[in-house]
Amino acid sequence: MGKRVTVTIRPKDGLRDPQGSAVRDALVALGYDGVSTVHVGKTIDLLLDGPLADAPAGELRSRVEEMCRTLLVNSVIETYTVALGPEDTAPAGSVRSGNKTEAEGSADAAGRSL
Amino acid sequence: MIAVPVLPGVNCEHDTVWALQELGGAGVLVHHRAEALPSGTQGVWIPGGFAYGDYLRAGAIARFAPVMQAISAAAGEGMPVLGVCNGFQVLCEAGLLEGALTRNQGLRFLCQDVFLRVETTASALTCCTEAGDVLRVPVNHGEGRFVAEKATLDELEAHGQVLLRYCSSDGEVDAEKEAWNPNGSDRAIAGVSNRAGNVVGLMPHPERAVEEILGAQDGRPLVRSLLEAASVFVGAALLLPAAQSEGSSLHD
Image 1 (tube, rainbow over the protein chains, first blue to last red):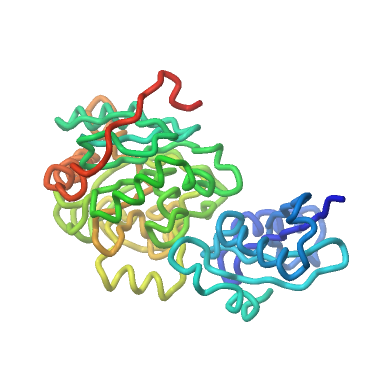
Image 2 (image 1 turned 60 degrees about the horizontal axis):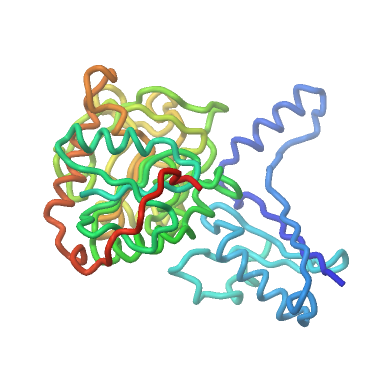
C-alpha cells in the first residue's frame, strides 16, 4: 500500500508577495470586496511506497522534512507544513535549507511553525 | 579559461562565450553531467536561461547537477564564479550566495536596460570598475527581485558584499522608485558576492552589452573583471582532473 504525504508551501510572512497581491486585486475587481489578502503558494503531493511508506510516522516525517530542507522549500522565502495522510496535519515549519544550516534541524522547525 | 556550464534549459551560453572572446578571454562549454571542470579552468560563468525549466523554483534543481558539485568545490577553493540571471538564481539556491530571487514587483516580466551603480570593487565582478561608476546593462527576467532577511541584508552591506545597485542614469539610488529599481529588489540590490568576493551574481546581462552593435558596451568592465580575477587565480586550477568529453547536445 502506498502512502500519501502532502507538503504545503507558502510565501514567508512579511515577504512582499506581488503574485498574491495581483490575485487579490483581480478578485476585488470581480466584486469580491471581502478579500483582504491573498498568498499564492504550492502543494506537493508525495506518493510513497516501499520502506519509506512503511516507516513509523515520526521517521517518515523527519525524512520528508529533510526533503523540504534539501530541495522542496527555500527557507529564505518560504515556509511549509507536512501532512502525513489526510488526518495528520501537524505543522512543520520554517527551516533554513542549504548546506550551511542543516545542523539547525527540526527543533528550529517546530519553533517556527505556521 | 572560463568554464561555462550548460545546464539543461539555459539559453545564454553562446552569448557568454562570445562576450568572453570579445574581451580577449576564452570560454568553454561544459556538460552539466561533467563531474570535474576542464583542466586549465580558472573561472566559471553560469549563464542565463531556464535551467531545468525553472521547475519547482528557479535554480532549485539545477544546483544538484553534477557540474554544480564541481563548481561548488572550486568556489570553495577561491575560484572566481559568476552567475548571471538564472546563474545568479542557481548560486543563491546552492547556498553559495545569500538571499533569493523572487517574482518581480509590478506585474511585469522585465526586458529593458537598467542602470547599475558600482558599490564596491573588491570582487570578481567589479575589480575592473570604479566605485560609483554607472553602467547601462539589460535585464531580462520575471523573477529578479532580490530579497533577504533584514539581518542578512545588513551583513551583506557591512562586509561590502553588495556589488551593484539599480539606480537612475546619474547614479541615484531609491529602492522605492520603480523606474530605477524596476523589479523591486530589497535595497535596490542588483548584484552581490560571497564574503571572499570570488563568488558573484547579478540579474542583468553584461554579455549583452559588450559591443556597440548591441546598443551598449557597459558590460565590458564587468566581463573584464571576471577575466582579470580568473587570470590571477591559481588556487586549485592545477589540481582539478581533466575535462569531461563535450557532446554536441549539451542540454541532453
